[in-house]
Each structure stands twice: as C-alpha cells, then as structure tokens.
Length: 263
Image (cartoon, rainbow, N blue to C red):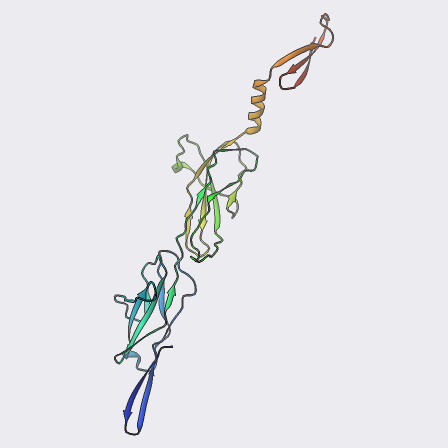
C-alpha cells in the first residue's frame, strides 16, 4: 500500500497526516478484442481534502515504461480500443507530493476467427456423412491456454441457379449446437455454412459457405448395373423342338438368372 506522511514540527508538538492515493478496481474478466472498458477507483484517496487531489492516468505495455494519458485527469477513465494486454495506474498528487496507485491489468482476448469448413464435393442421399471443420474456430480465449466452448448454428440453403449465386439463397437454421452437421436430404445441390459464437460475449463470425451435391446413389447404381447387363446364354428348358410352349432361362454377365415363359 502506497502512502506518505506529512509531518509539521512545532515546539513540543509533532503533527503528522497520512496521504493514501486510493486503490483502483481490478478487472474481473478479459475484454474482447478491439473493445474498450471503464476503469475507476475502488477506494478513493484519503488523508487530505478531496478537492485538493489531482489525478493523472498512466498506461504501460510492459509495466516498466509508463506514459501519461492525454486528458485523463479524473477518477474514471475509459480506455482506448484495445488489441493487446495493457496496464494502467494513476499518479495521485496532494500538496505537491505524488504517489502512484496499484496497477490494473486489462487482458485482451484474441480476435474470434470462424475457421474453415472441409470442402465436400458430393455425398449420397440417405447415408450419414458429416460436414465439419478443416480448421476449427479460434480466438476469444486466454493467450496462455484457455479453452473455448464455442456455440454453433449451422445453416443450409438450396441452390437453384447453376452459377451458385449466394444472393438468392434462402438460409435456414439446421442441425444442433455442435461442430459437425450430418444432413439427411433429397438429391439436389445445397450449400452450408456455420455461425460461430464466442463464449465470452465477443460476438459471432460466419464461415465461408461450401457447396455439396447430394446424389441418389442407390438408384444410380441400379441404373448402371442395368445398363451393363448382357445375356451370355439362353436355355429352353422344354427342349428346342417344342413349338407349343417354351420356358427360357437367360443367364446374364452379372450372374443374374432370369426365367421367361413364351407360349
């Protein structure tokens, strides 16, 4: 605790008065990147007349070199927009004597970054396949190793035009509050993006969208098999000379066996 004693010496009498510069309120939580905060006294100076105190706020970035802040001469001070950890103190002057208060550290969170979604060219309708982050969200956490539980809101849009014009997309909220999303959609072309929200109230950011083609893989496989199916042998199980009626067995190159009746 910084203090100063004023002593006046008179014959047979010693009069002393303590000068206490006060105590600045600590900042309980880090502030968001590119924001400001209000600083003030938790305990005002004491030991003298309140009207006789003067104040000069100071700033430092290393707690060694201190600089006076322009027009910062009251008991409160609103910081500039901060992007790095910054330290503040007040030089309190009374009757020509100056004493510094305690130091207040204002810790600044890194900027919130949305991350990057994994590019997915296509997936099959009805088959679970996850859309997730290639580069996860970051920022809005302590520099020394904090952990952020981000909130996630997935959005989906249908692509109607072939040029992938996002200005005509009607975005719909889908999925859960999770860092992955599994769509179950009919065949078509869609786009997806994710809104990421800071757990410290530092706002939201939006990922770039990705485009995904949902295919009807099952029917496509059936059609492909049908188009390549060829008869490699045919049998008349009633005999080749039977002109009344015939039962034919067709054997295909894919192993399929077909029985056909021809009257």
